[in-house]
Image (cartoon, rainbow, N blue to C red; front, side, top):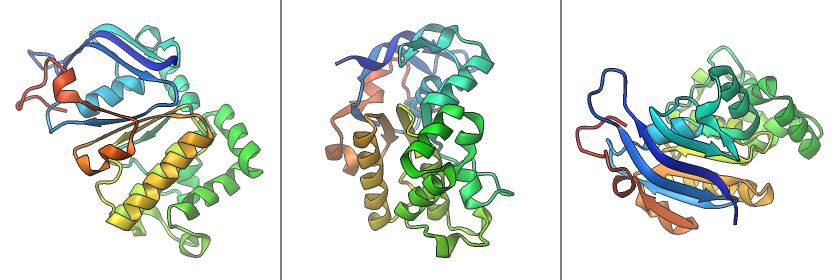
Length: 237
């Protein structure tokens, strides 16, 4: 199995920090693998995902995603790479309040011709792809009409954010506490769609959460507190 993610001797500290938030000697994720990463607050989960998505770069070491050294790219190049190849489900959703639900889901297609083309190949056009994903998330057309994301519950907003990450079948999906605002039924529906999409599109999935109930559903589990030599109760994730 080839690796979709490879990290070697990575360290990261915030500009105002005296000690590293992350110090990971070695970490890899196989192509097509479904990995569950657990860890308490302060173990560096969100920081790790930011490195894998090219949002930030390490102070030292190598971060390779899909064969590309993200730490060697410019900020603009990392943004372009993320738009084309990485679907991110942010912990804080990052939905745009003045856009409709469908328009929020379509955002990756606006920034990536590649994902727009893949969405069209699957569903005929990106809008149809967005509506299919939202329906699978329990947000059908009847609910969408005339609704703003600000009218939705927190759990519904979380599902819109998930649909946005899935559209256009990016090779890598990374999710930061994606089920924290979902009830048990909605959580299972979300995970079913996530796993189904990942299997159909041969995507690699990395999900971080403190909710260990999901661990048996994944191919492998990693405790970031064990992996990260800098992890400490006073660190900031």
